[in-house]
Image (cartoon, rainbow, N blue to C red; front, top):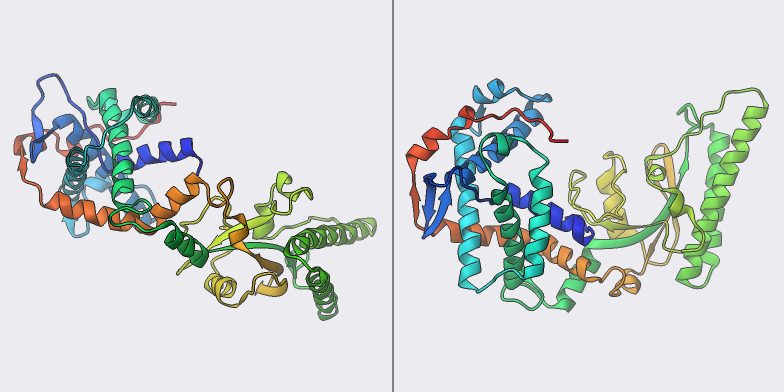
Amino acid sequence: MKIVKKLTAAVAAVCLAATTSCSATIGKNSQNALTVDGVEIGSGMLVYQTISAYDKAVSMLSDQNSETPTVKDVKNSKIDEKDAVDWIQDKATEELLNYAAVIKKSEENGITLTDEEKEESKSIAEYIYAMDSRPQQNGVSVETFYKISDASYLQDKLFEHYFGLGSEMGCSEDELKDFFKENFARIKYFSISLTNSDGEAFSDDELRDINKKADEYVRKINKKSGELDKLWELDAANDEYKEYVQSLNTTTAAEGETVETTTTAAEETTTEAETTTTNPYANERLFQKQTTAADDSTSENTETSLSEENYQKFNDFIFNELKPGEAVKYQYDKDNLYIIMKADIEERMTEDDYWSEDYIKDLLQLRFYEKFQDYMKEYASSLDVKKNNSAYRRFEPFSLNLEKTSSY
């Protein structure tokens, strides 16, 4: 779950809702596709969810075959041992039930949107509506997307109601802080390449010199008394190493050789703004504990560009071996050394930093969102469903225009 700014989070919420809940009508007197415990779901909603489910099918088949299937390819495929038509319609129905569950639960708990939320919701809906022409081509109106966005806001409020701080199924603020400290590490590091600009390993003598230089950087950092001073010194060591690399390149160029400087994956994510020496936090990363290298649910400040090779070993090192406040030399892989330090994460847990309102909300989502989904699915399964089979036949997936074209 990435920690994002409010507007981006709102847009993302709508995108999520677009795959989990929506409502629309095709024509004033269009028939309902479903009635779920009194919640009437029009055929327009079914059309939209069918398009959404088709896109999921395309994604799944693309992952399996390493190429994007055509509409015909999808139609002739089996997904999870089901014919594509059945899989798509089942997935669409599942999302329609989720939509109904959000509406019903909101009504049960008296959860509504404020005027300001409605205006925000409407603006975002119009933005999302313009991104894909297929809903319009298949008769889905912008009012559908107003309801999509409204439902996403209601869903967020339901989550807060059941899983917010101090709520029925949530946790206390102290418990959430413990969760944050257990699952995130505040680290600062820079890498030292063990290969030349051609990617060739240095000689044994060169490697000894590099390791000696790395050991000296570590010694100078740890010689400082306070954590802040150590962070400053780590930046200074990074600058010194860059100057050293530049001097080597200059010497090589002077000897008439072509020079191509290279950077490691970790260095590639450092922007010009991050190299400033006026902020000791500038080059830090918030690193999330992960069980596999493929787990990418990290914050926007988390270093995610590391190669997958030996990733778990690195993750275990960060959380199980690296001591806070002590710089060390660590060889991540055969090509790179790291000068790395873990800092006190609690120091930055303030309301304008790592303990802002947005961070708290996203941490709650990280911790409880799967439980919330399970809770809502269980509730949805208890609702009385009346399905209009004629609507499902009329709006069968491959009778729709499914060719994706951008509206931009």
